Every structure is written in C-alpha cells, then in structure tokens.
Length: 278
Image (spheres, rainbow, N blue to C red):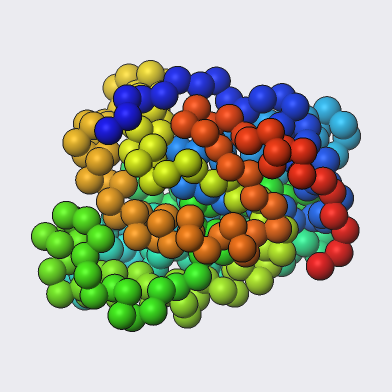
C-alpha cells in the first residue's frame, strides 16, 4: 500500500485551464473522480479565481445532499446495516440536488444544502446559504456519471467488506439499483463533466488517508479514523470507483489522467479546451 502522498493543491495553470473550459461550458460544470483525487480543492480554487475575474461562482458537492442520519439508519434497519454509512449510491437526496441545480441553471434564487460531517446530520434549511444569482456552479462528486453494473457483475464480492459484511449481496444490489434508477436524473443535468482519472485504484486509500490526516490537523479534537478504518471505508466505494475507471474515459466530456502525486498528464492538459454546445 502506498504511503500518504503530500501535495499542496493543483497547479495554478491547471486551475486556469479548467476554469476557462468551465466558463465557456455554461452555468453548470462538473468534476468527478475517486476519493482524495483533489476534486474539492480544484473546485474551490476555480471559484476563487472566477471571483477575481468578476464571475459569480459557487461549488455544490454531492456530499452536500447526503441523506440525513435518521433516514440512513432507517435504511440500515430495513434494508442492510451498511446503508448507515453515507456516501455510496442510495445515500444521497438526488431529487434535492436536481431541484437546486435546476434553479441555479435557470438563474433563480436557491438555497444550497449543507451537511455537517462532524455531527453526521444535514443542517436545517434555515442555515443553508442563499444564492440570489450565480454565473457558474461547479458540481463535484466521487461517482458523477458512473453507470450501474449488470446484476451478474454483482455476484462475486469485490473485497473483504463485500465478502464478510454483505454476504448475500443485498447492500451492493441496493446501491446498484439506486445508481440505475435515481442517479441518471442528476447525470442528465451535468452535460459537461471533467473526470480526474487516477493511475490505479491502489492509490485511492493513500489519497483518502492523506485527507484524513489533513482533517485531523485542522480539527485536532474531532474524532477521526485510523489507517485501518480508512482502508475498510474505501472498500465501500471500491466497486463503483472501479466501474467509473472502466467507463468514464468514454463518457466524460473531458478526461485528465493523474499520476500518484495528482499531477495532470501534460497531453491531457494540452487537450483541455473550451467547447460550446452539446
């Protein structure tokens, strides 16, 4: 397993290039990629640069629309215990995110949902920031535009979590069914997707561990996960992440391959160019 990698955010030239592409794309631009690949950091840097240019930009993450803890606990009780854990398909409020994106795309006022990961609760709607007008919304999420698998592909466990904690496949079938049923409505609202492609799945636990270390440094008193916890946690996302690695290079509008240090491949950087229309 690779050791934690230490990087300080995307190259400024990469931020500029992606922002140029996003501004031409229209009001909604999406960034997808595996856990820890730098989606949130890239989106935040793009927003900062956009505002310097006088462009009213915001970010909206798939993490902002997790189902609230009581809803997930109900799913854990009624369907499978693993559904208590936020993040995999079936644990997001896709209708809420779609409604917010529709408002932002149409230039209407919107409130941006927010989720508090420390308390594992969605914030009350009165505490959601209000956006009166927005030129660019950057959507980021780990599973954007990934298609569901065939039922036959779910039979063989992907890892020890699936083998030992989802013995009859109930959890992975539920997640896959949700991905097929609910998520395409959101994908249809994201015509311009940049996929940050990892060099292999094997770097993802190290990337996610680095995120955890950064979070601990910023919140020393907050509860955190051990490296073993992280390795198990990443297994909950492995199946869909690998599915994305196999399919998104042919689906996404833009694909940038990252090396182990999250550095974009220079050829992919050169190919990044603004495109107008469908």
